Amino acid sequence: QVQLVQSGAEVKKPGASVKVSCKASGYTFSTYGISWVRQAPGQGLDWMGYISVYNGNTKYAQKVQGRVSMSTDTSTNTAYMELRSLRSDDTAVYYCARVRMVRGVPNWFDPWGQGTLVTVSS
Amino acid sequence: SYVLTQPPSVSVAPGQTARITCGGDNFGSKSVHWYQQKPGQAPLLVVYDDSDRPSGIPERFSGSNSGNTATLTISRVGAGDEADYYCQVWDGNSEHYVFGTGTKVTVL
Image 1 (cartoon, one colour):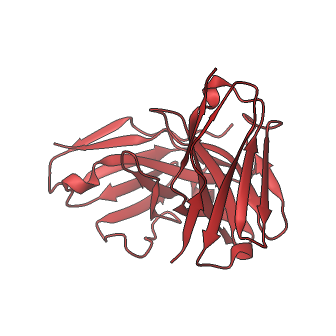
Image 2 (cartoon, chains in turn orange, yellow):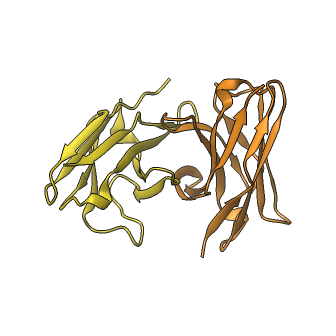
């Protein structure tokens, strides 16, 4: 079955970086995109960015532009999200999600990874 | 930036129908997708492309999109439908995804 399995929880100090992985299985990795979404405690869903696995093109949300990098490794069917210069308000659960493409346009997310809690604290 | 507005909460009696709205500009040109999120779980796609259901999602979940409002309808609501629900679109102008503010559905 199609699934995305993310790496484990992280605790980081302000100013550090974190890299979260998302391993895909059960489908042809290169025919879908991957998006990253985060959710701060008690808050809604906050889209961070998208990467086309096919050609590596990325789109990042303005809120994290300049601090985030998304990449994929097609040899291991794994996507990565790195966030730098961490602040306390980056504390959140980070999700990856498979993106369905329709006529070259990104569309819905299905399925989602189980989430990775990143805590930023001194 | 593009904004999607949802009511913060909707309450419904068991067996009745819950309707969750999502408002945005020029919705007719965009496909709207809906996600259900239960506490401690990852979101789950329940409706895509305005009104289609993924396999495994009950027929009780349906969607529509007209004018500047999309609606997720949950018929014959049960305790298992208590969750937060989010709408989502891809804004082609900014090439960004946007999520709605989220609606908490409570079954009375």
